[in-house]
Length: 247
Length: 263
Ligand SMILES: Nc1ncnc2c1ncn2[C@@H]1O[C@H](COP(=O)(O)OP(=O)(O)OP(=O)(O)O)[C@@H](O)[C@H]1O
Ligand SMILES: [Mg+2]
Image 1 (cartoon, rainbow over the protein chains, first blue to last red):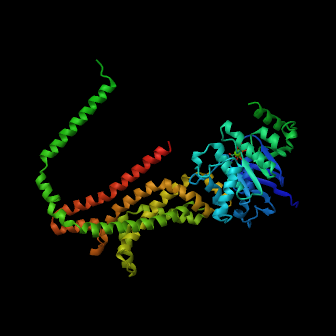
Image 2: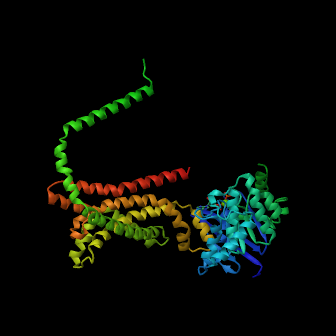
């Protein structure tokens, strides 16, 4: 296998009871690549992303991240997840911890870094996402955009090999979306491998190396944004894009 | 002329006040206060209760309560986690345990464990405190397990997902992320549970404990036998109130604060 493949998904299927949500997904993500996943609500985008770090257990198929087969029963998922960053639509910051503690806790408990080292890294990362002097703020004292940036810093603190974003800006007020997208864009420019579920077509167009359009649990069409977004071939892609771009 | 709704409500309120005052007056006039006091609140008997009612009886009640609470909390947490486990036999075991101990009256459990088992097996309780506190803890753990489980389930699912996505194991995430948040939710109901335990320790007196381990209720009853007067029980009741009222007020305060914070 090519060592530059970070995520490799083969014939992935996932059902919730009778609901067959993912129907044979094949997807490979190269190191440093930014892949945006778009598609209508309920098409299985979140489920796909959550299968990449096994928050959902696939019904069939394989997920390989950096040579580790996560779908193998013998795989140490805790160890594997530590290298896969995830950012959620609802931020999911730990409300009983300050911003700094949020970024430190997994460094301490999972990576076993010393308190000083973790704090130094956390402080640096918070500054990097544009949060200075917010170390001691609790999530409730931060705006949505600030919370999401703490969540990004929290994931980055683990030195992930790949970052998963599930509609990271969908829960934000319009005026706060930009600050989060900007952080994501700068991450992409620094070469982070990213798998991004988004409704932000501007971001997909400007930042993605590849856009994947999903509908009904399958990949309908994929390619560079200039193709999938600007000149889609498939009828369903065109219908979806016109519905998003027109409102 | 029709009477307005507000006027009607006003009349109704005045009627209730007047009737209450009449009832109170009737009570004051009809009841033989002198007799009541000599049977239930004789000052010299009140004085006689002290200091033993505090230094021995109330102390024992508190010891039983704390042992029962500590045991109940530890096992309650264990059973709550078992109820939430993905391993089915754990869930079944915890669910059965909880059903059984919530379904049998504490008095019966106390008698079975305190008397029944020793008689049946010849085994003796090594310590009279444990004889009362262990059954109390076993029953309390069944109630606390449900409280703790509800608290854990009230923590949003995204918290566990975020913790797991950072590479924490299930138990690490529970300890560091979930349980600290659940605690805020369950401290008021657990404090209520503590109040219930204070009162439930009074049932331990059926086990016929030694003089040194008598609880408040037993102390009061023995006092009644001793003095042929109800005063010792009244004093015991007042001592219970001195312990329970501050705690129920604390719970009320915590709930008000929680309500204000979530607004
Ligand atoms: N935990 C679950 N249990 C049962 N059904 C689920 C679960 N999670 C998702 N589904 C179902 O799977 C389907 C796909 O859901 P998914 O969240 O992956 O879609 P999505 O593409 O992310 O949609 P959206 O754009 O609204 O976020 C939906 O029909 C949803 O109801
Ligand atoms: Mg989704």
